[in-house]
Length: 169
Image (cartoon, rainbow, N blue to C red; front, side):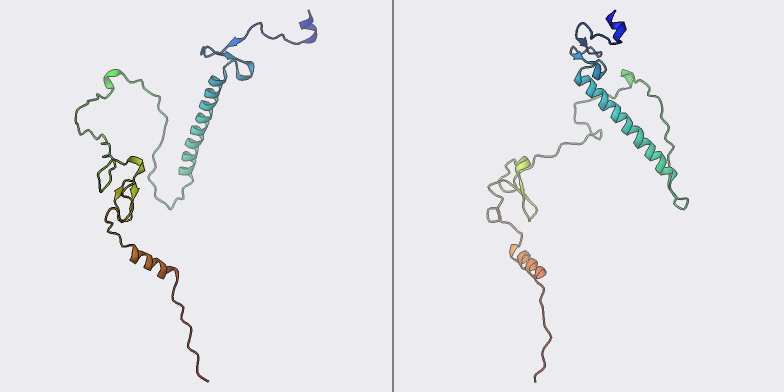
């Protein structure tokens, strides 16, 4: 009888489980979802809005092109996704097939001792890769001419200034 007079509703008797049945408890503030499920739902909504706005900007951009420019345009129409069956999936082979698969790069190695350096390799000015021991130019017989490069840098930074000759009095 008190509920009818005040118009207030009483709190539910027990905690509410998440509507996604993840096992955690939800709250009315998060639409009866737990915090993780609510965050995932909000993220999906933002991604859908972003995709819709980028699709709209692509359509608007093609309509705003000047008539003088000749641009090949493609009509983009959303098609419903057709479910694929297992028979239409490509087959995978573990052999050495040349089916356009990118081969992994060879491991990066020191040019002097052939030691694997990975991400810790040092690129020299001579264009080769070296380990920590051989990174200095005197340790790997560097072919780069540091003397000439230094002289050129100084000459470029300090141009020659010549004053006009003064006449004798």
